[in-house]
Each structure stands twice: as structure tokens, then as C-alpha cells.
Length: 243
Image 1: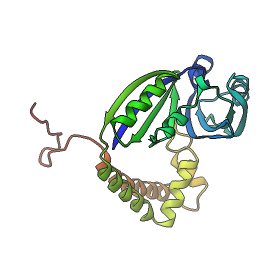
Image 2: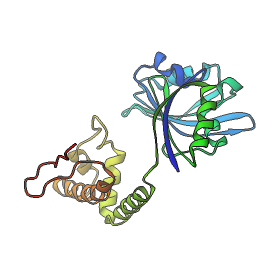
Image 3: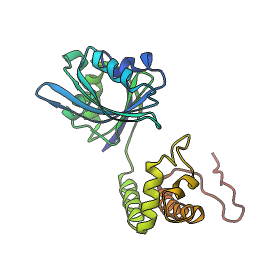
């Protein structure tokens, strides 16, 4: 099993010149599939100050059949847009190439700086080589990494995170969910603890305590997935390994 991470400037695709028209917008490809010759895609775009102009630009793109605004949060400047595209051979969707070669995305692809960023799982080097050759036919490809994923560690970590979420009390889940929905963890923050308390029956101190306890449980479960230097228990300093 191999993890193949790459960037591609997808020639002729909307992703190639998105940032030429909208320099600040970043997009994530939530899903994409091909149906009766039409590619159906859902994207989440951030830093969208004018949703109508953004959707109009997508509608006018040469590979698009139709672009439709699904939802728009003006406060967060976030838009969900559904796309239908009639791709020709030289602008085939990247996901088609990946799935045809049995390479499966591990996270949604992101679009920044005129490039699509993908991370996929493949069975062997032959699959990766074949996929890479086909991708080069539709754009310029830059490989970020090719490595054996730590699947056991990843699966164990995900199981622990899931258990940590399940271990939250109903009140902790309620307060944490509201904080996420209201943009407490956005950058910049969409609200503060006082704002959250106004929507709750508890006071500011209690809401803050619910958040801290929830965060502690989840972060302790996430910690083993992070690659970081170990700390010396006696000094509290990071240990340095000799070269």
C-alpha cells in the first residue's frame, strides 16, 4: 500500500485559472463523479466575497454545463456550489483518472494557486506509475510524496478519536457543536464564549468549561497521530536526538 500525494495544474479545468480571477478564494472538492458523460462535482469555496460573481464565472467557464449555488454563508464567506461539466478528453476530471487506476482519495482535494492538491492510496508502484503517466496527459504534475502509510497507527488513532467523541456528555456535544456552527474555531473567530453563552441556558463560565473539557478529551485522542519531539519529563524540554 502506498500514499501518493501530488499537485496538478489541470489544463483547461476551472481549477487552473480560478485564482487568476479570484486570487483569495480557496476551494475543496467535496465529491466528484461521472454520470452519462457529465462530471458532477460539489465544491466548498472559502473567502468568497461575491457569491453571485463567483457562480457566474463558473457558469461561463468552457468546461461547465451549469454551476448552481447550493448555499452561502455571508458571515464566513463560504459557498457550496454544485457543478456539472461536459469534459472533453484533454480536460478529463482528475478523479476519473484516479478511480480508473484504483487510486482512492483519502481526503477531499483542495484547490489553491491554480493547482489541485490530492492525496490518494494505491496498491503498488505500478498503479502509481500508470496513474502519474495518465495525469501528465491532462496537466503538469508535481509529486509531493510517495510513501508507505502508517495504516495501523492511523486506524487506531481514528478509532480513539471516535471513542473520545462518543465519550462526550450530551451537554458537551451540544456546546461544542454550537461553537463549531457559530465559527468559534474559525480564523478569525466568528464568535466568542460570551456570544455562545447568549444562546445557551448556562453562563459564560459554564459554557467555557464545557468547551475546555470537550477539547481536552478530543485532543488527547488526537495527540498520538501528531509527529512531534518527545518531552523530557524532568526538564519539560524537547529531547534532541543526536545525528
